[in-house]
Length: 357
Length: 101
Image 1 (cartoon, rainbow over the protein chains, first blue to last red):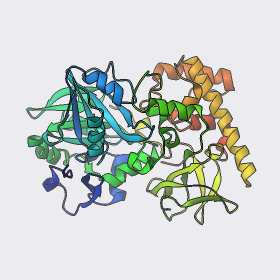
Image 2: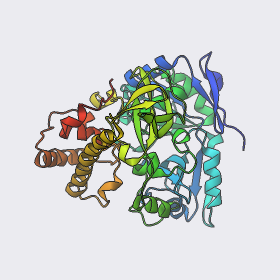
Image 3: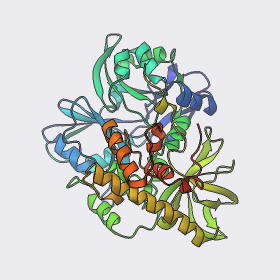
Image 4: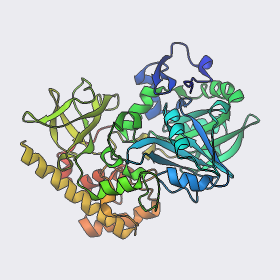
């Protein structure tokens, strides 16, 4: 399957830096990490989510199939709602984290960045008669708006009333005469919205949105996700790491009777955990994944993933530790640096104290 | 701190978090085992998906269970179970910085 490239790349600001994330070429930065992060946390940022595949499940048994492959319950997901769910392998490891968009006669699955090919292969491997699995990515572009004042941009761009939709509501609406699908959903803890627009109108919408919001690339978005402990699957779901070790059990509905991976998750929950994940900050040098975590020279765990947090002005990351040591408030050593484990969210989103007016 | 001291510190937090999870499941009649809720799990919006009515119920429950009134607190108190633990058991918060911004 071909690598994804943004359909609005030609309209990206000059000087954007690109990189490959799994099966997608994405903008890592449009300007600087600091400026884009500041837009997400203080104002409004525009995201080009073209690295995410849009996969449609349709046919007579689409909902039944979705119930089988999704770890959360979508039986009553209407055409006005969306939700986030994990997709698990039989062994309880994470295939992907998806946003499920309810539609009248189908469901749309939005993959995480670059993970669409893997997701599509997984879905097709579990395919059954009565379900059609169609990659719709080439027909659309998906854009996001995130930030404490993203609601203002929604008002200026589309319709002010959409800004205050309940969380995870979606609406079929129009932008400049074009049918678009609009949703209130995001990943950074700030006010978040997404617009699914037909590809032929994508560049026009992107260019218009740029007049009101600062474009933010993959690096700033992933940093903001980490700061509110929103899973970034590609960094956190290493080989053999189950969903409980990842700390993402909250994206699994264990009360649902059956879904791929459920037995493994239940077994892990009832068994003896070996590792759990906790956040940390400290030092300015960002430790690589796998860097040992020690206490008095004894290795007790390792770094999962870390970045430089603009908000905290230090390294910020996740550690995998024995369960009896996976807690906030501990001083540990990562490499040669003293760090402290944290309670989440590691940065409090400004949107939590910013009303929509 | 030695490894044993760190384990004791972690255990204190785990105990408070377990008490909070039990309280949430019981008061809000959730169909899950308390241990299914993770310490870092967001309580509102995406996460445990509690709503503003649940908040009112939790205010009352927290005061009854822990003797702590959180009525005037900002929403960040409910950022996660572990964050809530800092507020109902302030001794934990002294050890745990909670970021900025």
